[in-house]
Image (cartoon, rainbow, N blue to C red; front, side):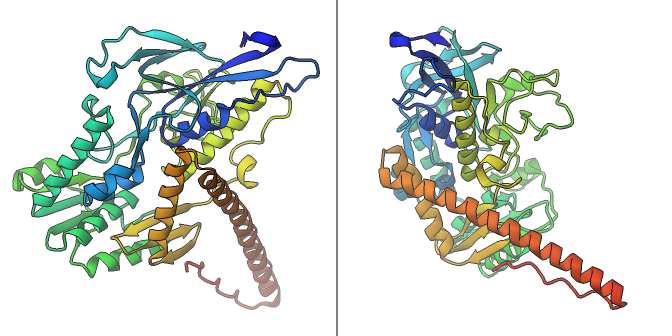
Amino acid sequence: GGGGGGGVVTKDVVVLGGSFGGWTVAKRLAKPELLRPARSGAPPVRLNVTLVDRNDFFEYTPAVLRALVEPDRTLPRIFKPVGRGTGARVLRAEVTGLDAASVLVRPVAVGGEGEGEGVGHALRYDFAVIATGADYEAPIRPSSQAERTRQAREEFLRASAACLRDTGEVVVIGGGIVGVELAGDIVEKYPDKKIRLVTGDKTLLWGLPERCGAYAHEWFRGRGVDIELGTFLDIGALKAENPHMMIFTCIGNKPSCGIYSGLGTTAPPNARRQFPLRVDETLRVFNASGNFTSQRVFAVGDVSDNQKTAYNADVEGAYVARQIEALARGSRSRPARYPVEMTGTDSLPVVTAISLGFRDGLVVFNEWVLPGYAAILAKKFIEASKLSQMDGSWLANRAWVLVEYLSFVLHRLDVWRQKATRDLSRKTTTAAAAAGEPPAKAEPGRTS
């Protein structure tokens, strides 16, 4: 760290990526207050936070699917200037490299023209956070250099929405949350189109409680959507069969970490995550030799292989901000490992709201599932509170913090409930065996 006026020590924090995880890190660290040092007599610490992003906008990605069927109603509300509401210095640039002391960047020309022609330079850091997200098939995420401005991105989404409106046949490949929500919006808006929902999995919404897939299957079947489970399609053959067919590929979320791949090509057996940027239990990044790059490089959000939700990215960002503050202060008392520090348990809750069209859906919390309009209300609340938070709304910020806190408390209670159920089942089985009786059947998990 460098020195500062008035006996203040300055530490430089560089956050790479301004979506959910990166925004949270920058927001929590870019505060006007100085950090109190851990050692008596040491100078206070100022964090100098720089947020680097190649786009000039933040996009509320969960709403992009709705924008493809209702662009006029959706697009005006889902964009914000990148870094809005963080208080951090914002640098629009491409990241070209990362070493042990600095981030190499090449500024993007204003307006997005001449990208790649700027003069590169190094940003020195005391702490770096990689939050570059993931690449996805167009049009769900920006897929080309041409979509680096809000205007260009909005024009591309409007063009995609027009193509969808004009086509007579749609194939959605992928039965996860993205594929299910997209197919649901399309059939709700265009009930007369021929729609196929294709997945290689055995059920829709694989990985969530079984009732989710069954509920979604019945919902689509009642609306005439052709569902193909355990099926793998040749996209080239599909296009040759019908060049006017519109195909949405909703699989293969690829973390945007090519420039950092040398940091995590191997990792020791105790690495908490195996792909693609390997991190330890404090979300620090391993280097190619299986050692830490240092205690100063972290990764959050979709660039690592945690569950791809805004909720998870936000929680990881909050955790890393705590770690950086503790390190910057020189504290020997560090936050506990992730996610114990946040939830009090070894796991994060599964929290998601899935829409099925405009008036139905599923709210999922761990193994609990609530079908119906509650999912639509939950999605509206999450979107409105997050975007209002970026606009500086105190109420939205408090609401977001409260919802996360309640989710941690409920998750802790649910974990204890599950443990108590297992312990009771074990005791019942042991007692039954001692009495020579057949063990009682376990009750099915609660999903409503």
